[in-house]
Amino acid sequence: MEIKITRPQGTEDVTPKQIYKWHTVERIARETAESFGFHETRIPTFENTNLFLRSVGETTDVVQKEMYTVTAKETQFTLRPEGTAGTIRSMLQNGLLNDALPQKVFYILSCFRHERPQKGRLREFHQFGVEMAGSQGPASDAEIISLAKTILDRAGLQNIALNINSIGCPVCRAEYHKALKAYFEPKKEELCETCQTRLEKNPMRILDCKSPICAGIAKDAPVILDYLCDDCRTHFEKLQEYLKALHIDYSINPKIVRGLDYYTKTVFEFITTDIGAQGTVCGGGRYDGLIEQMGGKPTPAMGFAMGLERLIMTMEQQGCAFEEPKGCDLYIAPMDESAVPTTMQLGQQLRVSGYQVEYDVMQRGLKAQMKYANKIGAAFVMVLGENELQDKKAKLKNMETGEQIEIALDETFEDKFDDIAVQYMFHDIVEDFEKECQ
Ligand code: ATP
Ligand code: MG
Image 1 (cartoon, rainbow, N blue to C red):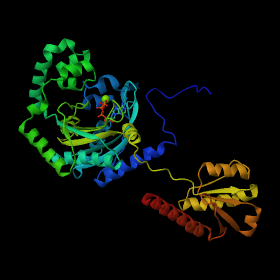
Image 2 (image 1 turned 90 degrees about the vertical axis):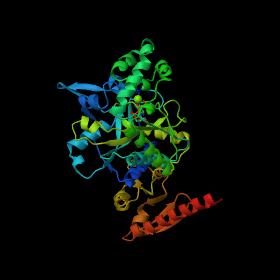
Image 3 (image 1 turned 30 degrees about the vertical axis):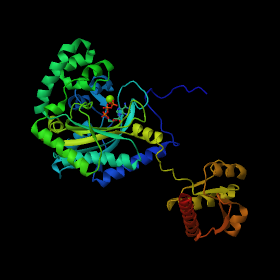
Image 4 (image 1 turned 45 degrees about the vertical axis):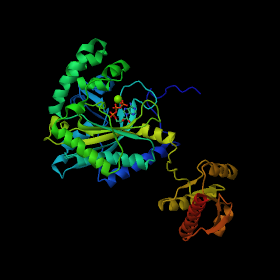
């Protein structure tokens, strides 16, 4: 078969066969965030382009090379390349920052970046992210890092390294920029074209350049930690004290600057070597200037974003457990047309009480129906024919053991099915337990 139109490069389908992996990580992330008192927020898929120019920063890779922008009716819109800008815009527009602080939100959303597609690097990808607005102290930095770590731990990840750094505030950054300029100026000609302009506008960006030549030149560049002002230094030290108290291992990597311009003070990344070059599963940091820059009152804030494709890939690589999807509890097989209405009624009754019930909608013979019931892994099968309808009784077949249990097709049907299903589930749990004990 030749498919006429295939999906765009750098996008992925998640089929029903794979979706349980997504449900697993989304559930873990959601529950963990809620346990820290964060609430879900939803924002539009596209925003006015200016929002990203102003927040993410005009000298970043994201803005310079990666945004999908369309002009519609003379207005420029951009598909969100990340979630922070839209989330902060939404907080401001909905007055959330006038409520109790800190405001703590999380989101699960798709992001769009025009990058060269490769393993772990897509053009449409998904992030789980959190933002905490209104808190300045290092305890909130520790809280954010601890939330990310708890999610990764609950996902079962091993060998995931936390790297932290402080990139200072506008005060210490000014001194640092001077030092960087002095360092790169004599090597200017060797830098890539983009970095040559960065040298003028935003020299710290050079440290985030993916070109191996620029990275080589940047190897011995001055490090920001040597330029931190007292306030930023104390903040960074206190954060480390809290991380130690939380038993969170970390390394200081003075080279992390992160790819978005709005960061200040703390920046961090969780990295794995198990999925190849694109090993940053989670990245985040503090952005004390962003809210004011976007028109709000000066409000310190901090957040992170986790790449869900990369998280799932790492979990697969490490053999972490995903919750298996719920299967069919009962398949009802009507032997002929006359049994269809009763089949529908009984099925509907159980569905309403939470069971997964399927029955034939293809007018297939009994043999084909049984084959289908086997394929979908139905726990029980019940055949309904003329005799069953007349006697108001049928047999429930346990598909694992082959055991048949009689069940009345009257008002006791649902309760009886409940009993049998509970016994069956209980049997499964006991069996699992016995296996574990062996
Ligand atoms: P990288 O250095 O890998 O390009 P980044 O610094 O651009 O990452 P962020 O903007 O901080 O990444 O996004 C947060 C997280 O989103 C990343 O740590 C990563 O897990 C994920 N991510 C970013 N870009 C992509 C992409 N193109 N495809 C898949 N996941 C991505
Ligand atoms: Mg990037």
